[in-house]
Length: 618
Image 1 (cartoon, helix red, strand yellow):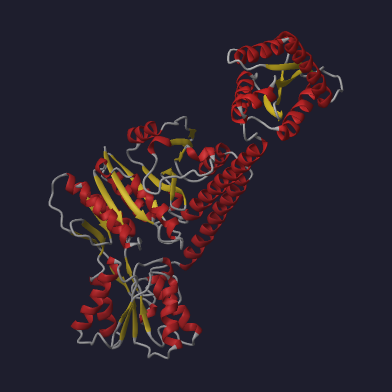
Image 2 (spheres, rainbow, N blue to C red; image 1 turned 90 degrees about the vertical axis):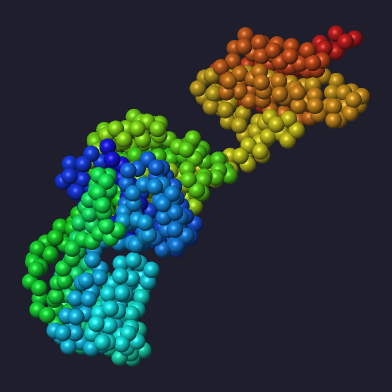
């Protein structure tokens, strides 16, 4: 079985599932025994740099040498350092690498022909519509596809004898807002309108057309516009936007073809292009292409909106369900139940077991993962809840049954700290609803909030414990006696459970301090406390009541086990030449005496023993 890795970064909140769809379609067409592992991040969306570090850490999950081929989609990675680090690791792996729409020396490029259609567009605008002044409304300056389109634009100008300075190229982003910004700058600064804007994609073109109308300009009456990508917003926009047809799924399929040829030892060109086609429409002055069915478009939009609303409601229900739970096991169960309702074949949640503890000061890795502590928290596959808890077992399972499937890995992290990851099997719902970031963010945020809550509770409990502890001996103090033993006594009394109260006092403690010093006396008290605690029965308490006085309390008491406790303590201390007096009082089920009354009786019993000890010495 061939193992293929797809390394991708989402565009804003979206995931480009077309790549995955095209890859898997071609794998099925070739009847190829292969599995696809996708490692997807959203490292370009948040304004928090540390959060983005946590996102990109998912790439450290890959053991690159274990793959037969790698597909790299890094056009959306804005951090040069991150992108170059990935590229360097890929070079060192010696595994065949195919890049999508991004040129890297030594790797095989797969993408649309970004060059020929832009040249054709410019020539069409010049020769058919008489345009003489142009502006290239570009996308990201460093994006490989954008650079290629801009290069084609400049060469077309040269072929037509047009000056680059009078026909400039701008750079921005690939979004609708970039087109709006371009048009605002033209209108607000009274810049001369060109005859045509050649846009790097349909988003930019649509933004320009819409913003132009706000300033009293109309396309194609006042100027012409072209786009690229043949998105729905181009075909159904008013005016219909002249564009370049490309099918992203074909790019994913072409990546598989390149890898297959390489595995078979065939010669493969460095650059591999998927055919594209110029579609001329209303925005450049041509008639409507007639390639769209507007009623079908409206129908699809209605169906899509209904489906999107349903999935959004499921996410709202997940958020509500997670909010009512404060145990991670219950939160994970809610997450798995949510994915069972979506169009996918499985999900696994892998987390660092330190997450469960919520210990104050816990630090998770910022690079890579704490492999020894990773566990499978929950999951399901093919309609069955998983029984797998061991990560090695899960990895082996995926390798055994993975052929023909795609597993998408996304990170669970608290800012830069890596807590785990989610594995989604065949997430078909992403094709129509690519807003996976919303799901991912809701889950990560809830887990982070619960972890902080657990840390806060542990910190409060630790402070409370310190407040209840005697600083010298480390056992509970008199405050704890009042708060903890008193409440336990009341509960046990309510249940009719007999308890033992043992009052303890060190013999001749004043003379110990006088003869050997207070430091020695403190060591005696520490040792008494230690033995009282060590020998105390289960669910019992030992506390320092004050000075050299101690109280022990434990439930399910009988005359026999109370006497045995006293004997164990005194025999152990006698061997160390430490003498104490102990008085025992058992509570009576159903009798309404107070704890203080029982303690007074235990105190009296202790004094009787102390008197006996004095008589023996005399």
